Image 1: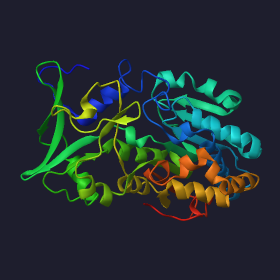
Image 2 (image 1 turned 45 degrees about the horizontal axis):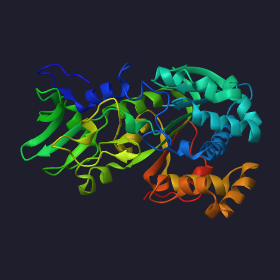
Image 3 (image 1 turned 30 degrees about the horizontal axis):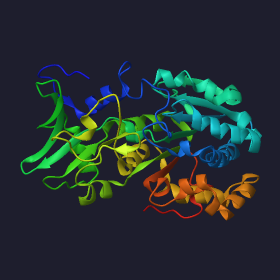
Image 4 (image 1 turned 180 degrees about the vertical axis):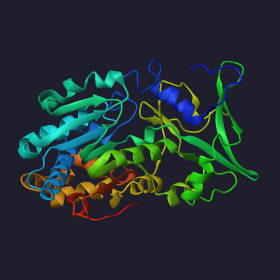
Length: 379
C-alpha cells in the first residue's frame, strides 16, 4: 500500500484502503476470511447451530410482526443480513427455517448486503436450495424494509479514527510514509470536530496518555439502517462494551488490533503498531461502542429491547424457543457437556462473553423475546 509523499491519512482512511480497496483490500480480495484456514474465528464457523438458533428467534419475530398487522396487509418478512460475506449465516438460518418453520420460510425475502464482489459472487452457491428466498444482493442496504436487520461482526470492521489525549488536549493519529517506503504514525490536531463531540456525547473522560478509537462510520450506518427500517427489529452481534467501559482505564491503550492466522498483532514492533504492518494482508478490527450505536438507533425511533452476552441470548433461545426446535434445544442443553459447537458458542471467556447482542425494535412495542428470556446480563 502506497501513500504519497507528504500525504497524511487518518486511521479511518488507512483502514478503508487496507480493508476495502477493490484491488488490494483485505476483505475485497477474498470471499471468506474466517474459519480454520482463515485469520479469525466467528460463531458461523462453529457450524450450522448458530444459524439454527437464530432461525428460532427470527421466526418468533416474524410472528410478532404478523400478529400486529391488519388482515389485509402483506405478511412478507424482510431478512436483511448486513456484512453477509458469502451468505453462510443466512444459508444456515434458512435451511433450519425451511424444516422447522415452513410458513416463516415461505414469507421471507432475503437481502444480502456485502461490499466484496468476490463474496457476493458466491452467495447463491452458499445458499443452495434456499437461494429461492434471495430478493437482493448488493453493497448497500435496501431503500426500505420491514422485518429484521441482522449484523453479525460487521461494526467492528468499520474504519475508525484513533485519538490520544495529551496534556494540551485531544490529538488524532495519522498514517504517513516514513520516507523509506514504510508506514508510520504521527499525531496531529483532530481532522474533524466530530471526534471531540462524539467523546462528549459518550461522556468519555480520557486521561492524558489514553488512546481510543472512534467509529463515526458505525454510528452513521446504524442511524441510516434504523431510518430504512419501517417496522421490525435490529440485531447487532459483535464484541465491544458500553462507552463507560470502553473509554476507561481498562482500555487506555485502545482496542485497535489485527489478526493473522488467528493470532493478534500484539505489541508494537520497532515503534510501528501491528495493525499498520502488511496492509491488505491482515484483518484490522476494534471493539464496538454499543452506547453510541444504541443512541444512534434510538434517535431514529427505535427502542432498545435488550443488551446482553451472546451466552445468555442463546440460552434464552434454547430455553424459550418455540416448538419444534424447543424439543431439540432441550436435548442440546442436557448434553451441553458433550456438544462442542454449543460449548464454543456459550463458553464464558470465548465467543459467549466476548460477543454482545444488542436488540432494538421499531413500531413493535416491547414484546417478550426468547433471546431475552433467560437472563439479561452483560459481563
